[in-house]
Image (cartoon, one colour):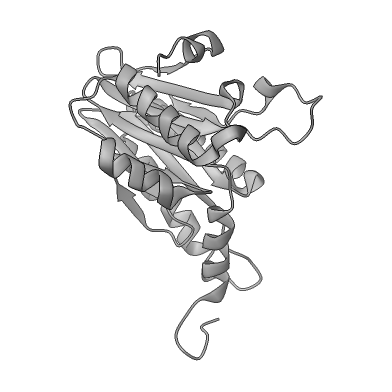
Length: 221
């Protein structure tokens, strides 16, 4: 319900839940687009690689989420289903924007159903069709396209760092270095390269690829 001053408090609470989530970033580079997310390990005996923060939606689309993990999992599964149905029906890869719009329609519906709460998660979609694209979907059901952005904890500080240091001429290697530097700046001593989950899609293959831990450790600061 609307509050007396015209606000949807449930939606605003959902947005606050996102801001407390694990930080994630997306960067559009001259030769592709990449996603980088932190995997916060709650227990020392957890196997880190089981905490997948960057997921594949289709061959040419990746996604990461922050906020309530269970909400993100459901929406990512729905995005995969939409991509599969498009391939079966049209025998062609789905447009990134089509996925984004479908997910935002679902999110918006849950801001107005009685007896349901909004999704407490933001999704960061990256992919390549005819051009490189990066979108953020908000708990409200709106979306924005970016050249580089961040979601989750310390997102404002990370965005400030990206605003100052991002260049459109960056390649994927430079973009990855930029994202890791941004995380290290806001996390300080808590930063741990073994917790990073990162993937990219280059504009030649247009296929989702995951950076290995060895690849990440080779990054020169």
